[in-house]
Length: 64
Image 1 (cartoon, rainbow, N blue to C red):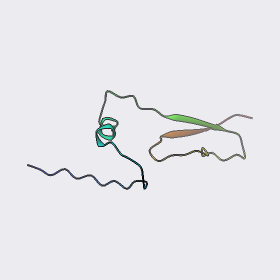
Image 2: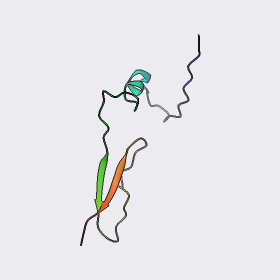
Image 3: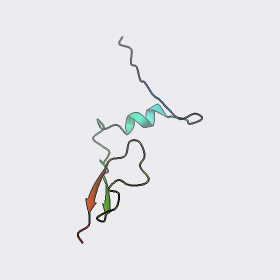
Image 4: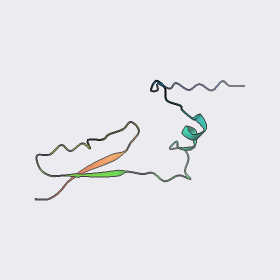
């Protein structure tokens, strides 16, 4: 039988539910792909200020 290996680097004191992580993988076509849209104005930072690992987002500059 093949051995499955997972390498997780986590936050001290955090609890990780491997079953939930597996259900939320991109190979699960039963869950929607969520992409966040961040709008910004000319001269502002195009990156959201509250980024978190695992997020998918797109930046869109508002027309002046």
